[in-house]
Image 1 (cartoon, helix red, strand yellow):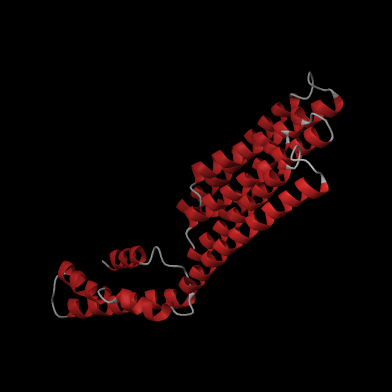
Image 2: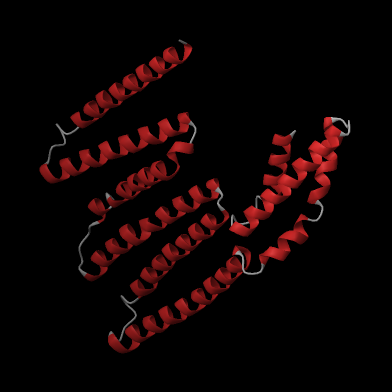
Length: 268
C-alpha cells in the first residue's frame, strides 16, 4: 500500500517543477501519509481503510504548494515565459527593422533581402527549442526532455542545411543542394548519440538496441556517402556495410555471452 501511496503522491506532483521546495513538500506529505497509514494499521483498520485515511493529508496539498511557490521555479517559470514573450516581440521588431534597412538603404532592393527574414526565423526557431528544453529540464520530466531535445536538433536542420544552401544559391549562384543534404544525417546521428548518452541507461533495452542500431547504420551511411563523393568509390565503398554488420553481430554475440555468464554465476 505504501508503494501505492508513493505512486499517488508522485502523480499529484507530476506537473510541478522539481525544485527543492516542491520535492521537500512532496516528501513531507508522503512521510505524513505513511505515518497516518501505520497509525491506522496499529489501530486494527484494514489496509484499504488505512489507505483512505492516509489520503486525507493530500486535501490541502495545493494550499501548501501555493505557500512555497513564491520564489520557487513556478514563479521563475512565469518570469521565463514572460521574458520569452518579450524576447519574441523585441527580436522580430529588430529583425524587421534590419530587413527594411538593408532592403531600402543598403541594397535598395527587396530582391535578395528576404534571406534576412528566413535566416532570422530559423535562428529564432533554435532559440525557442532551447527554451522549451530548459523548461522541460525544470520539470524533470524525462519524456518531455527527450521530445524537447528532438525538437532542438530538428530546428538545426533548417538553420544548418536549408539556410546555407539558400545563401549559396541566391548570393553565389552555386547549387549545393545535391551535396549539402549530407548535413542532415550528421545532425540526426549527433542527436542519436546525445540521446543515448543522456537517456540510454534508463531506456528499455529493446528501444536502446533499436536506437543504437539506427545510429550505427546512420554512421555507416555517412561514411559510405562521404567516401563515395570524395573519392568516387561508389562500387567499392558499400563494403563498409558488411564491416558494420560484422562488428554489430560480434558485439551482439559478446553481449549475449556476458549476459549468459552473469545469469549462470548468479544461479550458482
